Image 1 (cartoon, rainbow, N blue to C red):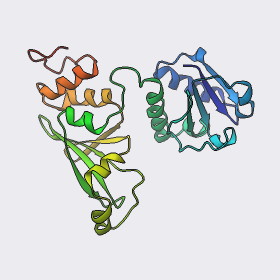
Image 2: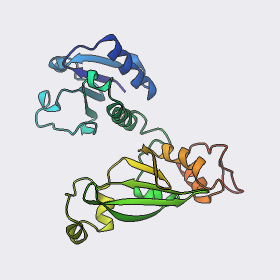
Image 3: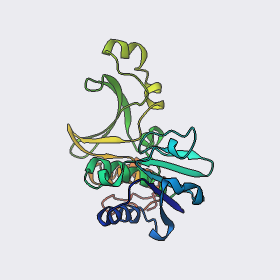
Length: 243
């Protein structure tokens, strides 16, 4: 996928090294990447992916607005707005958001790297429920699976739904189907009461489950099979379930 990276301020050698490492981590060859000052975009407008380093997309595309780290599709091209390199290099949270976004663009066609969603979690053996989050003043979803030593939970908030009092939330914003329809794309994984990590992609979840869930869990094995990715050795394959 030919990629154009747009910038305002020239990058330092350290920042360029970081940028190259990010693309390499998602298997994208450096020779398919062109760094271009955003003012020169009209001379380099043939690409499948445009990554803008801190330059609002509206500066070079009329009526094109995007939230940071969220893909925007225009025709056959994908646009991604991220923070400038000088902010990314020294901020682990921004690095993690960039990594997740790049995975979504460059790994989405690889088996196992599709994003987690409600139907997939149910297929994998999770049950779904809702709870009120006093921190965000919103209802959120949780998905549970009983593991060998603890209850595995995935918590996900809902975007676009406004903060409200518990009473208002119950009245207007607690419907399970509504929460599922507006679920965010990043899940926080809990083992018991302890937050472990955040994940977005099916392969990430299945790798975790292979260590946390019952190794002979039939729905876990079936989920691997559906995804077309190898079942880790830790997961015991039962008769009739192909690796």
